[in-house]
Amino acid sequence: MSETAGHAPVSETFAEKAKLEEFKLLRGEIELRAAEQRGMERNVILLCASIYGFLLYPKGTPAAADQPYLDLAWYLPSLFSFLALVRWRESVKMIEAVARYLREMEAQIPGGPAWESFLDRKRRAGQLPFASAWYVVFWEVVCVGTLLIAYFRLHPHDGAHTGTAALIGVAGAIVVALMVLRRPAP
Image 1 (cartoon, rainbow, N blue to C red):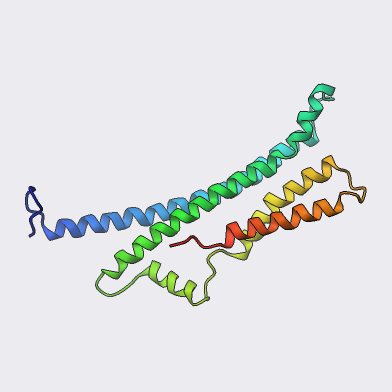
Image 2 (cartoon, rainbow, N blue to C red; image 1 turned 180 degrees about the vertical axis):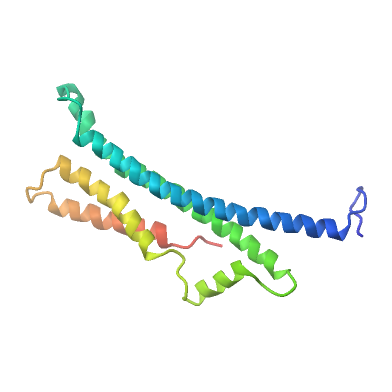
């Protein structure tokens, strides 16, 4: 038993139980955030499909005054996709922070490090990527692909805009790849 300043004695078993509960809650936080990320990926695809469905199959002929807004609406899928990517990235940063804390907790467990430490060792050895290449492909298609669709929809392919479209594609691909693959700083 130990005594804290001005408080009643606390049993070591209570402290151990509290640490175990904290560990469980933090593992649950990682699982929840991972599930949220998968849901966000699904939802961004559904949102893009819904917007494209609305734009491709309007109920009637739009009024001339509405046409500028409809033209700009082609950029909505790329805007929402980029916002989803930013949210996904923030979730990755939080998962990494929780995982780092869990590794510190695992180091204190008798019997040695556990799952988070194992993953960290594999990643540092280059045997397990931080993010799958499929994540890069997914976010490239969702963010950059939708941006290029909007660009070509508003600038019909006449050859004059090919260089601009290529620049948008390459710059967007680099930004998205860096956002997905860059590991959060410790």
